[in-house]
Length: 263
Image (cartoon, rainbow, N blue to C red):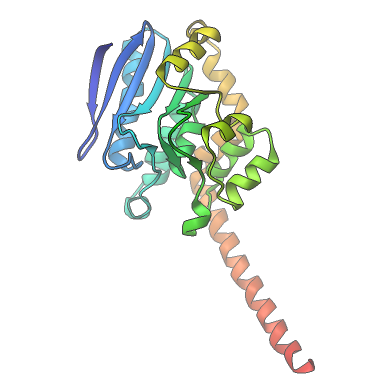
């Protein structure tokens, strides 16, 4: 495969763009140990997408990991909470870029995709998963983190089954590739050969040349895009919900204290 370019990931790592087939752009990212979605990673992936769109013919973009065990292990929560502008200016900007990209996008999930790593894959148009290695899992339940609005809505808009959505969110179910295919989370099992087969079978290279490709995706996923664009409003709304919830719980405790002596 010919190498088109390499984008460094700060402070250490890289994204390499190769062409396994004409007009198929394979972005292989390596940011050890597990491809966390830190600022350097997000900025590098954004730059790679920009280079392909503006300096190369239209085709199909495939992302995968050069780390065998992980596609991506998601966010670095400490980094996310302490880096100014991370949510709206970095992570959400990348997710918006992918979900509205003017060419077809395929996530080749070669290993584990947990939490934000699974979300990254879901923002692609198609997903192909290694059938023998790795789980898909939203494990926020296990480490006590909430799902922000666009994190939840991407699954509502892309999953057909509310049962799958429930099991994913409030049970933190780990999906094997076979389970994920059955539940409609992914489109096929396999590796790069199967990705190329999917691209050719669905004629994705030609479909991506349509002038309306990006516009159609904007309409398909307008709920999620609205949340990505309205990050500040969502944060205010979430803070209001927390305040109301605290007041509700205090009211319930007060009522219980008043009711207790009557037992």
